Image 1 (cartoon, rainbow, N blue to C red):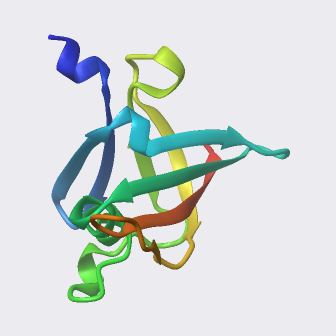
Image 2: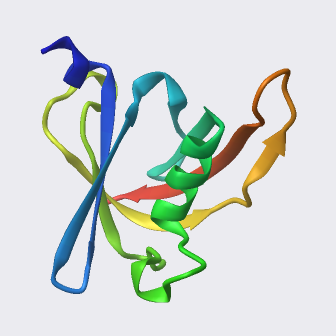
Length: 114
């Protein structure tokens, strides 16, 4: 039961399919900028960092890439169980920072409140 509390779910719709990705809450930090813009800073070790980035920008399948203005939703944000919808506004490049074991992948997702 507590497992769900520690995860954030990203949801997107591509074509007729809805896709969801659950990630540990401590990989994600939300920051509200002015004018309704929200920045989601992601920092994840190893393959999970690549998987989260690819959820938004899939270089192998353009149909799976989230487009500018496309609505996505997140749940478990700021303690809320209700998914919050945002318009996708962009994603930064995937940066790898070498660590003792596996690289840490960092990037920022830019969202606009709907």
